[in-house]
Length: 270
Image 1: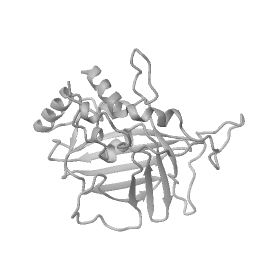
Image 2 (image 1 turned 120 degrees about the horizontal axis):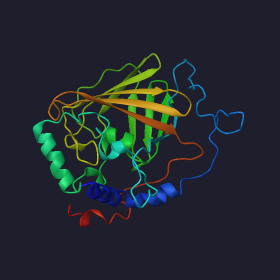
Image 3 (image 1 turned 30 degrees about the horizontal axis):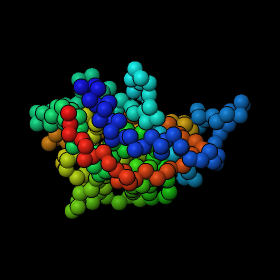
């Protein structure tokens, strides 16, 4: 089964290797704190906005915490959470019986029906685990997340507005955030049904409510805690914690999944 998962990842990400290996542009990131050695001091204090709140702005990369296969890691190193979002939980995710069956069937089919394999947006959780960069732009009233994947974006409104009455579900849902000390707490509702949370096919439905807690612990590290409350798919809410790390002297590049896409038609799941 592990080999199937690795193969599925390779198929889905094969078009991306040029993107990462050519990561543009070596243009220096402005305002980077330096250690006495002259190198970036990633443990320097968290930068702050004019109102004293932590500034989450920057380009962020995932934690590459998945062991390399025997043949070595390719350019597109994925994290454990990309394959199995609940890998760090002692008892795994608390699936409803139908959700456990669906995940098992999807794994047996090598994830061939993963929406991402057909160039559909992966949603919030996958955006936090896919090995493509995200650029956070924090301005008064709004945190904007620009995604390298398919040049999509996400808006988190911090202007005090309430969550909306959802008439049109979306891949990323609808998000509002507020500060609790140095932690930005984000509530999201209004997800499309049928989202996959990981490559293993863990489902999320349109009943899901998500809470994210963003905390920039120092200049170079961003902690993200995600709680999913989806009673249709899970018997209880569950929480995972992710680490992201600042990516310096680079920028987002074009990655358009459908450009020259030739793989999906060949995926038979065996």
